[in-house]
Image 1 (cartoon, rainbow, N blue to C red):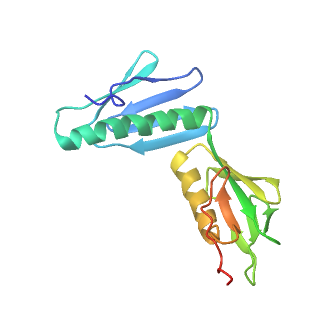
Image 2: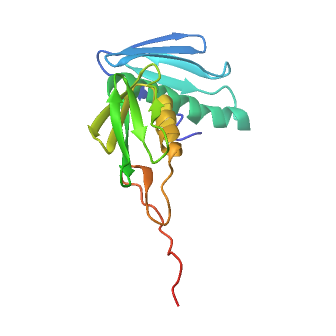
Image 3: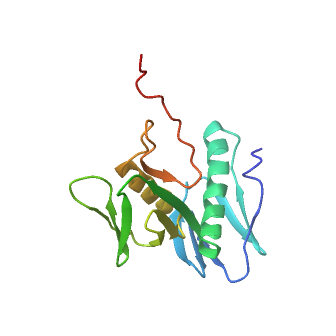
Length: 178
């Protein structure tokens, strides 16, 4: 049996969980998330915790078991604590400016790049070169962070670009001089 799938998901106080067939809705202080899961997975709410069971030991059900449990656990964690990603901008003249809920990035292009905040995600500028992305939905937070990083990936020669906080960039040697 799946080690992850069989663990119960504790529901903290102040969090409301509603299960209707294969649709799970989790409501908490940071917002509300709803997601539909595979109809074969059995999702039950038992006195302060959520359990996910599978109907058989087929390969499909085994793979869905741990996935479903992890997605529900992420929903519960998202509406209670929330998720965040930190990005760092490296490079001369590279910076970010807040424009309401959106951010405008100067990344060495001929024009500034405006990034709109999707619903449920907010941007916070710690400094002009550090961006914090917060939200209840782990997938949305990670997706928008990846899109911003993709605007100017870190250069392996000089290290210029946008990177995740703490990310190590493999540097390459430049041209060898004889």
